[in-house]
Image 1 (spheres, rainbow, N blue to C red):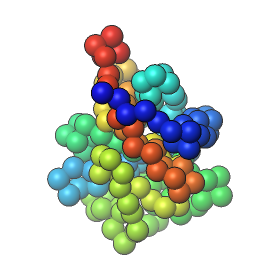
Image 2: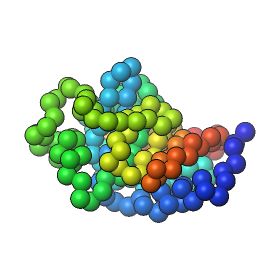
Image 3: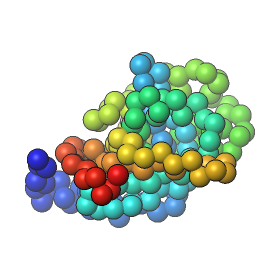
Length: 172
């Protein structure tokens, strides 16, 4: 049974939804003690009831097995003036080497991070986070794959909402 949302929780969700546009996002995941993150540019709301988002990601990143095994990910909205997150995770977006990241190491090591529902790492530098369980993974048969995520938690401007959703067979 779904838990009804109060007015403040609905306002947090509505404010987060209003922020989605093509931009710079940090996609994170973790599984069995391993954590990773990549920059992505394409995140879209797919449905509002139930809350579903879609994320387009280049294939072959080290985050892939973490998302596959944990069946979860989180999306953080990167502020336009944030240079640190872009430098720390940027090599995953454009193939360039990062000045502060070593391949195979934990990119969250030495960084303060938190979690919501799924355990995916959240950095406090991102004021909005969307925590998701993977509903579908679609191989687009080019350089990208597409993840459909069921939203299970949102943190926006310090307010956190955990979302209990039932996904009907029609959505799957």
